[in-house]
Length: 116
Image 1 (cartoon, one colour):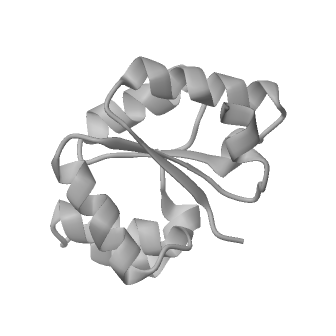
Image 2 (image 1 turned 30 degrees about the vertical axis):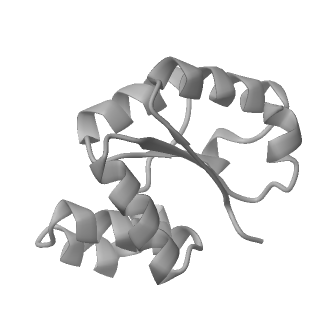
């Protein structure tokens, strides 16, 4: 199943949507926040009770290699590890270059109806 992904420019709107999802019993372990700004990503995830892409999603080998990579390369790898194609990851990462932050939800087919 392909993960759900949605871009945001407004952090509060993103946090509101995460609250909607958790109120519908979507597990926090299936809700991810990702952006170019690590502090922003962590702040949003912490405030909303979501996850960031870490070791469990990347695997230890990938995580170690990632410490020597550029931020864009790391973000594309993280997106691919969550289930997106290389071209999708490149497209999403270029949107992050423009300041967007993404909500990604795995293991759930009902996300769009929860957020409508």
